[in-house]
Structures are given as structure tokens and as C-alpha cells.
Image (cartoon, rainbow, N blue to C red; front, side, top):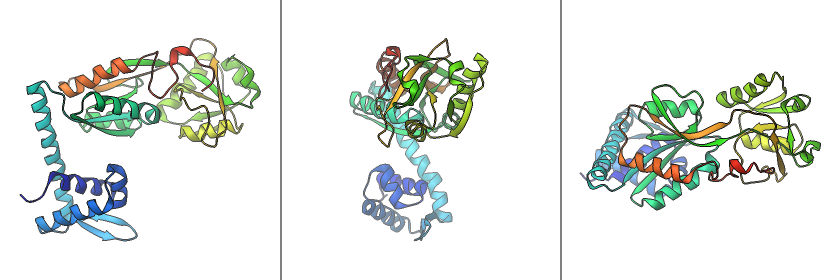
Length: 314
């Protein structure tokens, strides 16, 4: 055999990205290195793997499509070798396929991944960022080992390990008259414009808070991206409700934001680990669970202001 696992990995990355440029960005390898690896693989296998179209990027040939399936199986078998060796020698090694919910991934994922890799140098963390339903589907198909998400709509055959509670709060512009308040009720918010985070579970959660209080919000915007909402709020288009408390005190355009305590008793979001319930955990996954239990709590969530401090400004 005169091809390498690295060439196979570059081939898989390019096939999934649809271009060498995107593959280079995703796996942080230079474009010439990826291009050379694919060319060498095609020469060794004596077959064309990609159709190269300048305007449309790359597409797999029929042979490339078949090879992609086999290539992924080879990489999985290699990872299983590391897992088996780890279990036999009591060393923590291998690749952890980690899912993370997109709404808090920018804050949580970097420190969690880096600190776990630093604690276990033989481990490579391979992250996937997606919404809750996609993470569950990938866990079920064994494409992910474990995921960080909320405890909303977790099926019975999955296990949820709670780590921290994130109570809801109100976010307004620094120049908004409400910014002088320390707390506000849902009744008081009813007369103000509301910008809703329009992701399936988040939408149901926030609207459920109003419904439980018998209040109808004045929704003026339904947006799926938190940073867009923060910028809209910073420009006085309305207020929003949130659970994550980023350390960054400003929107992307530099306008500062203020958070207010949402008065009353409201169900918090819970960050935790999700995995398939009946699946036997490997030493690698168990080590990651222990790492998260020690790292994440109500008094410390990576990238966020601590939930228990109930800080006024975020």
C-alpha cells in the first residue's frame, strides 16, 4: 500500500466540503498539500476521484463516491484501534466526535475542546456545531460520541447529564430607558417591541415563558442568529430574551448591551451532556464526561458570565 491515512483524510474532507479551498479552511491544511495528496491518491488508485469544475468546485465521480464510503469506514476502523488500545492500556487516546449546540458553541466549545486536549494530549477533539435536532440525529447514527446541548425534547432513549442552569434574562440597548432598571417583569415587557430568537426549541421556550405568565409579547422580529439579534437590540429595535451570558458586553457593531433580571420564577435552560442511553461508554467518553463535570457548573461556564452571579451587564 503506497497511500497514507492522511491522504484519505484529505480526500474525505474535500469530498464533504465540495472544494479544496473550503477543505483547507476546515481542517487547517494548506491547499497545495491537499491538492497534492488527492493527486497522489488518484495516481496510486489509477482512477479519477473528482470532476473539477472551476465555477462549481469539485464533485465526486462515481468511483469517488464509492471510495468515499470505504474511506470513511477505514478511518473509523483506525479510530477503533485507538479506542481498543486505550481501553486495554487505561490510556485516554483517540478522536472524540463532539457535538455542540450552535447557540452557545462560540462561548463554550473553544475552552472545553482545548482544556480536554491539554489534559489528554493523546486525544483529538473533532467538533460539530448544529441545532438540537441535528445533534440528536447524529448521536443516533453514531456520527457523534457525545454532545453539549440543552435538556429540551431529549428522547427517552438518550441520557442527559446536567451541568449548569441558565436562567432567562432581558437584554436591551445601553441607551434604552429600560437599561436604568435592575429588573423587569413580563407584564411590563408586553408594551415593548420583542425580537425573538427563532430557533425551534428556543422559540418554544421563550414563548412558553410568556404563555405561563398570561402575557402576549409584541413580536417585531423573528431571527435565527443571535449576533444579528444582539446588533438589532443594540440599535434600539427592541429587547430580547436570552439564557446564555457572553462575556462580550457589546454587539458586533460595537454598541453596548445591558442585561436585566427577569423578575419572577421562570424555568431555566439546563446545559448538559447528551449521549445514547444504552450505548456502552468508552474510556475516552467517560473521561470527557468527568472533565465537563469539573469544568462546567452554575458558578462557571466557559466563555460566559457565571449564571449564579446574576450579573446585570452582559
